[in-house]
Structures are given as C-alpha cells and as structure tokens.
Length: 213
Image (cartoon, rainbow, N blue to C red; front, side):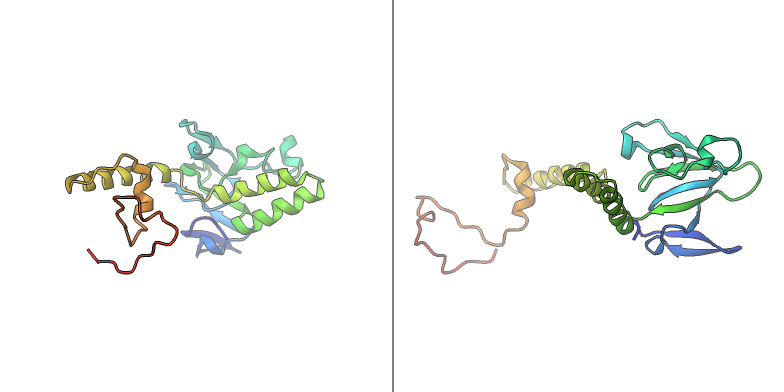
C-alpha cells in the first residue's frame, strides 16, 4: 500500500479515473495535478516536468526540477538503460515529497508511473538485496528506510509544542515540572501514591484503596 491515503487520478486505457492512493500498485500511471500534491508513493515521470520540494529527504529548502524519463532510442544514454531509482533520481518523484508545480508545453497531462509503494517496496528491497549477496546487516538497515519515512518530519516539533502547552497548563494550577519530557508518560497514569517516609518502596507494601479526583 501507499504511505498516504489521498485521492489520485489514474490513467486506465484512454480514461482518467479517481482512486485512493492506498490502491496503487507498481505500474499504475498517475496524473500529477498542475497545482501540486504530496506524493503518496515513489513514481517516475514519463511526461512533463515537476518542481519538487525534497527538503524532507535532503534537508535542502531549494526546490529541484524533475524531468521526464527519456524514451529509448532518443540518443540519450539514460533512455537506453534499465530504470534504476538510484541512477534516475532526477526523473523520480519520491514518496512524501511536495510537488509544488508541474509543467508541460504541448498541453498534455503530466504523468508518472508508480514504481514502489510501502509494502511491495519493502519486500522488493529485501529480495533484490538477497539476490545481490548483500550482507544481512545492510539489508535490514536499507529495508527499514522505507518504514522510517512514514514518520511525519514535523512530529518532533508538534510533540515539543504539546509539552510546552501542557507545562503552562500545569503551572496555572500550581504544579511545576522540572522534567518536561516526563509529561507524556504522566498522561498514561491512573494512580499516584505519595510516599513521605519511604514506606512504599518496601517489598511487602500493597495499595488497598484509592480515591478518584
């Protein structure tokens, strides 16, 4: 399945149909909207060009231009070679990257062929690595790259903002926290025992009753 569940346009014969990105499989032909989109999977451009923000992958804020994959026999050495995601990066739209704008000068649609989705890409990476006699450690690291990309890049910032907000709310009711990172853990607690003379740490001590606040 794809990483994101969004509505996409897919070419079926001579028609264009809407489908969920979770139903995409390698070989499907996507239509990239002219106003941009977040890529739900890896796809290679076969027509048109795209301006893409790949900051989530490279850390660079400068957008890059992706061109369509050359057709075989056009005199371009890339067009005669078998497709490789590593060798044809400048033609590939990677999952999670933001397509800012598309361009096509003859009035046709900008299209891309799906080359990898989450589940199939994970299995494909493992099988291909085993066939090339790649060490087991390297196979595990490379395969997990597909899983880790599903974590939103803004998640750490969102968690930090949530902790700061929670700390301010606690301060207003007279609760001061010297370790803000523990606030998330405290949110899972349903019972707190206060120990004044260090008796709760005794081996045979048990809690018999508790009061709801």
